[in-house]
Length: 331
Image: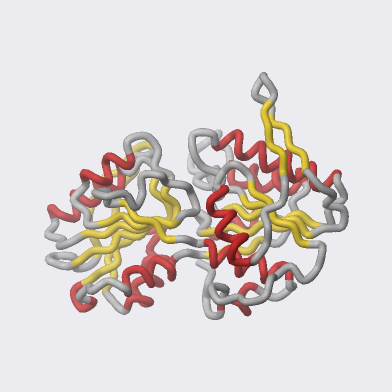
């Protein structure tokens, strides 16, 4: 929709777009689509590591949008940066402060799976609200139920159909292709992707003895000799994923593609993926990945900038996001 936007969005003085240090390249893409300038925001650190933030111009009465991906080795600094910027906007009398979080940190702990555990997804929601955030735009939460942790509006977008469009552009034999859910929890999203691609579905059943480790116990569905598209919401260390791919190969799978919204890629993840028996690993640019799209790399990225721009436009014009996207865009 927005690739051919001919008129600038800036039809009023009260919309301003800012970026944190989490993903400035993605923020620039969004700004270009909307024909907006990224406004000035000073972000520095004191000698002791504390974060300082200050808007370079007045934001009094403005609709402020702040784009920040919360991922990487400095994820805790990025969280604090977001909270501090929100507090600065609130104290500077901004009319509203919308934070655009392509990757929502601490989302994996969304319930108490064992005694004496925290629910960090709820803690993050509380921190954002208390810092002065008025609305959240986010992408493919680890679980959709996390939206319920907020008492402010949440626009929950998905990159599922973007990934689907990527595979539609490839010359695959859809009669012999299956979307593979890596576990039972991802089965609903995998079913949506398989319906979108008009191909088969398989579900991996696995056990998880500890964090970042799992073992595939079996597959529900037929994968023998078929092209497999393994879909997940995020790839962290890729240890679990690569072990699952090896197991799929042992069970007779043909070519294997891997796709996910969030390429966190901690530790040896990139090396593991490039050495894994896969054709490609496709992720979005929700999280920066300098190693992607390089010669010889199996990791490819697609941009979500247009989807984020559409959501910002929907919020600014006070139109439901569903009016912009059409159809079912939520997981």
